[in-house]
Image (tube, rainbow, N blue to C red; front, side, top):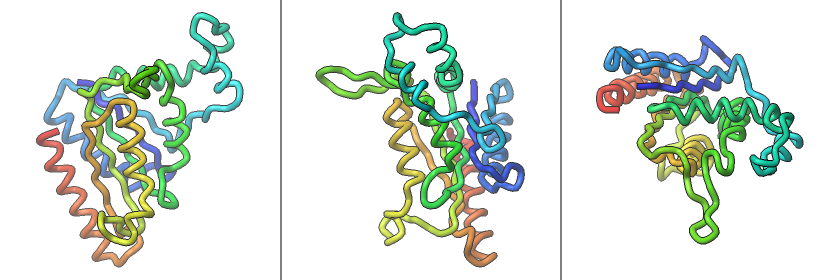
Length: 207
């Protein structure tokens, strides 16, 4: 089994989401000792987001692409190959200003590509290209709580976005675990972290 781990926090070893994700992956490796983990640390090593040249090269049909076009898209192709070959995908992403870190957004903009991770059918419209057999878990942290049914739910552009954009590409087997209230009292912070630990412990057994 191949596990792709995508971390996006700029806080590196101090990141709560990174700590939770690393513990979760360690439990998976205990369960699947022959598994291979491919790590993509976007916090310490961000990828370049698409620019004008990237956009132009991406819209040129493959048969008409020049060697320069392929060079421009080489990073994107490598990122797509990583997720295509993965059986499990783990994303750690703290909520920044109600959304995902810019590092993760640049990564996503590199992998959502027509004829690579989705297609456009003239009758049926958009169709995913990634295998639905893949499993995705998102591990987040946030200053407050954005539970369903509360007034703050509308401010959560992190979890719904990841669920939607990866589902668009075919990864519909989705779980999200969040350590909320990290700007609250110490008691509330620790309670949320413990709940996240418990949720990931349970998921590591069945995922």
